[in-house]
Image (cartoon, rainbow, N blue to C red; front, side):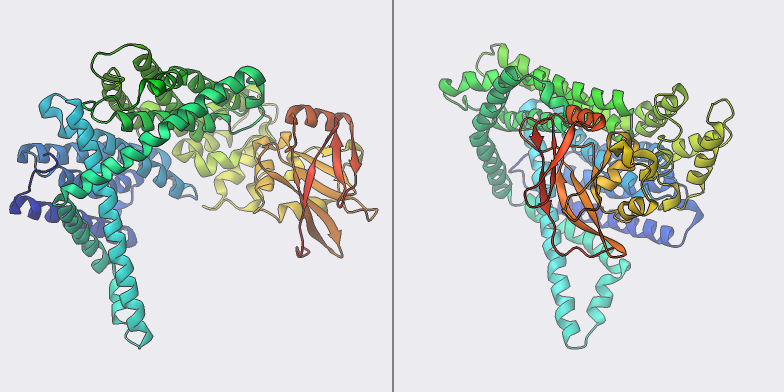
Length: 584
């Protein structure tokens, strides 16, 4: 199965049959879920069944053109893989609560990533994973999927227009028909099959799209390399300390490494072409790749600082795995950049790419199974922090266990509900019981209150009237409010000062994260009005930890341009006025 190989009529029919069969299976499963059938009630069975129906026929359809036995083996292999990982993940992560949708999306992403990376390995095994062929297979699969989904989306846009136009003149038949699951499931499968057939016959389009993407990334790789080298120079001058003062260092550094890997691998292509750059650019590009492990290491350390401060969550487990894979890629590409290779530019990247494909598949499989169950690890760590006193019974995030801890979180709460050997056992039992009793959306009663978490500054202003806390609680859509109600609330501050110059107290909720603004509330009749958003601590040379410490020591004052703003340690914060906010 190569670009340019024409498919026989029987093979084209097989593609359509596979696509329609998958869509019909999805229809049957959805009908079972809607009817609350017992055979699909178990969360593990449900995830596994949907994954098999969506993934196995598609993988087989993309492989048509190989030997029939190979296509059948791929279909069976994907069914077994998705069945096993789907059952394990669903059993662990789904509880029927409000966090189920997020967990389903997590598995969908894992299944897609693992399945996409594994497919060319399965398709190319007959030739010993010959790299040029693996490269072309991977690009062919990616472009066929993208273009087929675009084709399918355009098809449904036309049908939506069809239904809308006829509805204008009183014919609702088409709108009702198109909304029926018995119509849109099999029809979507049919269109996907036809799209794959159509695009399989347009090899020039697929090849042109691949070369277009490669050309664009080839042009951008020198710019990306310059960014990496200049940023490395900036770190030498400024030091790495500023990185730890933000919560975005790990993600930004990970993106830098990921883009280097993707741009370089795409520019390298199948490894059979000429050297892509003149020598004047070759050495800077190699230098940028050689320092990738430094950026990966800094990203790992930044994540470790967050874990040391707040413990593991399932998101941080995912992040740790992603950073580990990226770090291995970075080391491999750095070695390929340093070692000379005869006849090929970065020739040693070939074994790196093949090995890392297997590592990626293994990592995805581990995350979807008990081997590296992110929720089990997170729940165990959070419980250990509670029992060791690293987090108090008051600050412990019981809602996280109920909403995002999956089966392990619910079991942990049930254990805490019977806890005896803890100085705050009574309080823990009460909070655990409330979290277990919450409905899928976790009602307000079990969410941590701002008043329980956020220190008031100056301390002399405490205790605040309950109405102040309620005013901020009512603004649950504010990201600062949500963040300060989490386990990080102790790093937040509620600043009491006269911001609008009316002689009365106004209130600013200062989040711990540096990219969030602080809402400022003022009295307005019997309610509260948002008068501005404080940029905390977005100012030149600001150190969030130092400014928080100065606030705690009372080393601050108010200065007044339009709205009064705090001046802390010689640094003046900025405020964005808000007009027309209704009183609460």
